[in-house]
Length: 244
Image 1 (cartoon, rainbow, N blue to C red):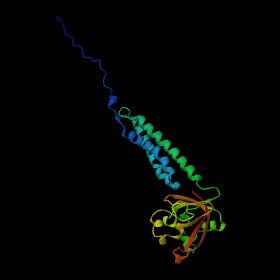
Image 2: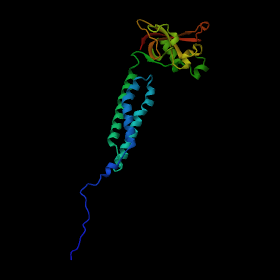
Image 3: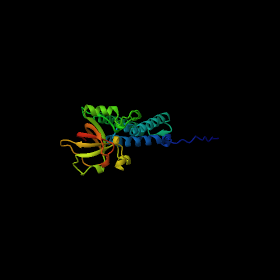
Image 4: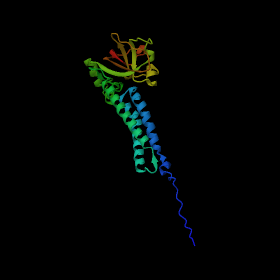
C-alpha cells in the first residue's frame, strides 16, 4: 500500500523586501528644503542688510535647517527599518552649513571693512542725549561733542529725506535722517534734531535721490537752528568727503 506524502509547497519567488515599505522621514524633506533656501537666499540677504545686528535673525534659516536635518539624520539611523531619507538629511546638513559659513563670513568681512580708514563710526542713537545728558542740560552727548571739537572725520549711515533733495541726480546737499519710517519721512517739523544731519558734499561727490541706505563720512559740526525758518533748535551738519 503506497503512502502519499505531501511536501510543503515552496516558492522560488523572493519575499518582498520589507524595506520597500519604509516611510520617507518628513524631517529629511523639510531639512533639505531649508538647506536649499538657505544656500540661495542667506548670502544674498546678508549682502542687502544695513546693520550687522540683523545678521542673527537672518541666520535663523540655515540654523533651523541644520537642526531639522540633524534630528532627521539621527532618527533615520536609529530606525533604519522604519525610515528612509538619509541622503536628503545629509543634503540638508551640507547646504545649511555651507550657507551659514559663506553668508556669515561675507557679512562679517563686509561690515568689518565698511568704515573707511581714518573715520570714526557713530550712529544716530549716539547723537540722542541720554537721561544724564538731559539732567545736566547737555543737548549734545559728550562723545559726539568730542568728535565735533576734534574735527576728526566721522562715518554714519542713514537715509536721504526725499523732500530735502532738489534733484533726482547729482545732489550736493540733502538731509540725512535716522530711518525711512514715518518718524523721519513724516512732518519735518516733528523730526528731532538728533535724528537728522544736513549733509554738504565736497569735491566731486554727489548723491542721487533714492530710498536706499547711504554711508557718509566727513567732519561733523553743530549750530543753532533758525526757528523762524522751521529749523530745529540745533542743526547737525556734515561736510561730507565720502559717500557710498
